[in-house]
Structure formats: structure tokens, C-alpha cells
Length: 210
Image 1 (tube, rainbow, N blue to C red):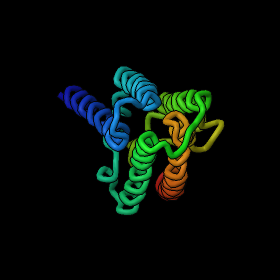
Image 2: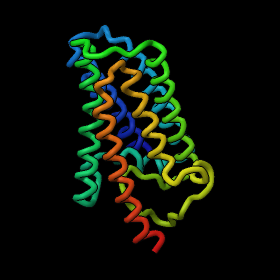
Image 3: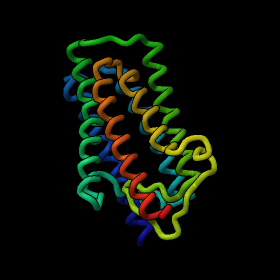
């Protein structure tokens, strides 16, 4: 029953995200003739789908931690605010890119667009290695039973590899979507990630390291 509930929640969430991102990318553009968006969506959901499949097969506990995400899943008001800020910036990247397609505000050469898709895929790959190494990477800031400090794999290279992977993916997104102006939202998104990272460090220092 638990596996059925997790599978249902994962599939429904995946479908909802697909529809939501599709609306964000094509509705403001008022056209489906936006090839950069189609390619990006393929890269995004292929990467996300492969990671989800891996977690379903190898670490369903982590998958369950990951599907409970977003501002409403957070327990502290500060984290709800941070998540809401980051979510708004994330949405803004796609809306501006879509409007950029409609009104031709800026142009990014094909090699840079391809590089953006590659960066998005590499960002997801970095996140995959984090999930593979650390089963405690919850989508919310919390302390799980038997949680410990991880210092192997990508954690041996950088303190917060998942956030690093997310930044790589997000940096590639405006390039992949052909929108210079979307980088404004990327900057806000990066600030949101840094804000959350600092809050997480404080939480872990008080509850895990202390």
C-alpha cells in the first residue's frame, strides 16, 4: 500500500510538473513553435525521469523525501518564505523566456543554446551523484533518524554538491531557452539558493554537529 501511494504521488507530481512547465513556456509565447523549449523540456524530463526511476529501484525512502517538496512542505515559516521566493524566481525564468520568444527581446546563438542544454543535463548528473551518495537529501530542511555527515563522493569535492548541481542546471536554462533576460531571474534564484544554504548550515550546526 505504501509503495502504491508513493508511486501514485510520484507519477501525479511528475505529470503536474510537466503540464505546469509546458504552460509556463508556451502560453506567454502564444505559440508551440518554440524549439528551444521543446528540446529543454526533453532534456529536463529525461534527466528527472531517469533519476526518479533510479530512486524508485534503489532508494524509495529518498524518493519519498524528495516528493514532499515546496513551500507548504516546510515546517518553519522562514523556510516557507525562502522556498516561495525561490519558486517565484524559478517560474520567472520560464515566463521571461517565453515572452522573449514572443517579442524577440534577445537572441542567443545555436552553440550557446546547445551548451545550455548540456549544462542542464550536467547539473542533473551532479544531483544524481548526490542522491546516490547521500540518502538523507530531503527536499525540506529536517533531520532524519540515523542521519550522519557525508564526506565521500561529491561531498569530498564541495560542501553542498546538490546546490552546486542545481546552480549549473539553472545557469544553463536561460541559455537553453535562448533568453538573455531570463538570467535576471537566475540571479534571484541563485540568491534564494544561497539564502537556503545558509539556513541549512545553521540548522545542521545546531542539530547534527552540535
